[in-house]
Image (cartoon, rainbow, N blue to C red):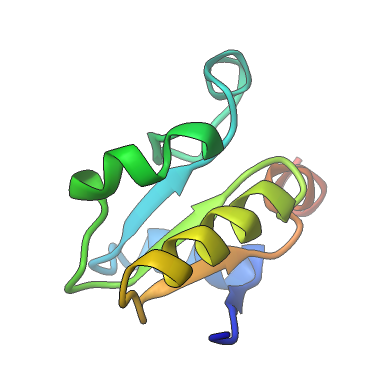
Length: 102
């Protein structure tokens, strides 16, 4: 199995500030996304495989959730079925973001 790449909230903040070319995907549920999100498109964990066409193949893709567990599971599922090498998990998810950037 492929190793999962991770990114810290500080590094993600830098990427957002410098307007780097990457995709951001929120793997939480719609009500969580509505309450607070980092600007990513919403593809809940349960829908990740059937929304494969929405996931970029040619640039980095950062996936996030509340704690970093659902997004990690999403990456594992995608890497098992498809040859993705550009998926990155946000360590600590939105909880870590809220602690770092209150």
